Image 1 (tube, one colour):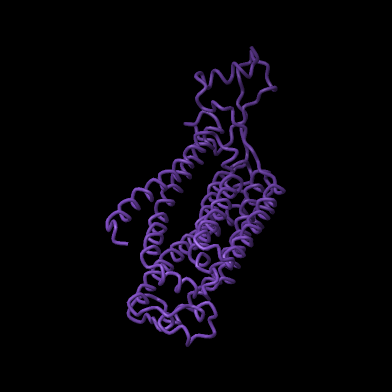
Image 2 (cartoon, each protein chain N blue to C red):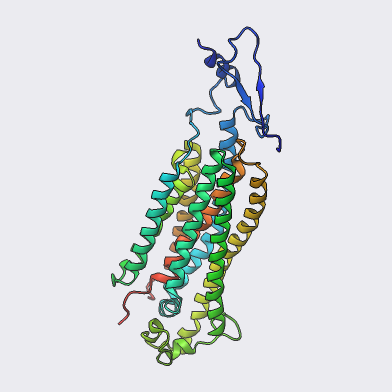
Length: 117
Length: 258
């Protein structure tokens, strides 16, 4: 057994501190430039799309673009793509709970005056 | 935290020494097994805080969703009074600020003090530019009596034909006076949401000034990246809030209305 293995076992017998053996990842400036360009293009598209009459689809398209931009920011600017599963699940659970709260509250409000609209 | 370096951990003499030196940085707290664990715990804590922020802004987003459905004509008319070029410019400014912040995290990781200080200063400048644009938008609302309360005026929404200088409003159908009153709810939510967002930016700029001073002292270019990284998470989160505020407040009622 190599010295490294002995050392890490001694410090972390049950392999709990870093079970995924996550390497610390540094995102390069070039990657940040791509993200920056993507976000600016996304902004231009969303402004342009706002002036096209798509009826009920206008807010949906606007929100879809906003969600895409938010995902890009979270994954790369906020390094979520390079984090451990614990942090990925934490982030996802936050947005999931938010959606649950919106859905549950809306079911109440939308059904209060059922049939009157 | 000011002494940059690092003591080396000497192992038992029996082990081959040198090939494996366990570097202990001064910021490495003893109750963490490894630096990775410490870093993950820090990120985890920061993300938990940001989740509470999602809930905080989420309440306002939900109120906006609900009232927009209830008083759609008032929300469409009031939303069309907002200034899209200013909002779009602010989006670009904020994205640029976030980009500078991201570069700052990289500079701290690769231990380039000068680059870190410059990127943090640029982050601050773009953040203040955002607030500057916001000032002119708020000023316009003030002059038009679009701040909810006793001095609120519905005239722009009851008689849009009198406002040819605001083409989007001018093209609107006049609202009945009772529906026109509901534009106050739009503007209340507009000020609550953009105001809370601006407050987060102001707090962020305050923190940035502190971080710039410490970065200039070399605190974050000796391997101790956590404050920069976690502040970056906060700053990007504030960006994300705006990425949703901009389309929801400014854009989704812009389609040709005739």
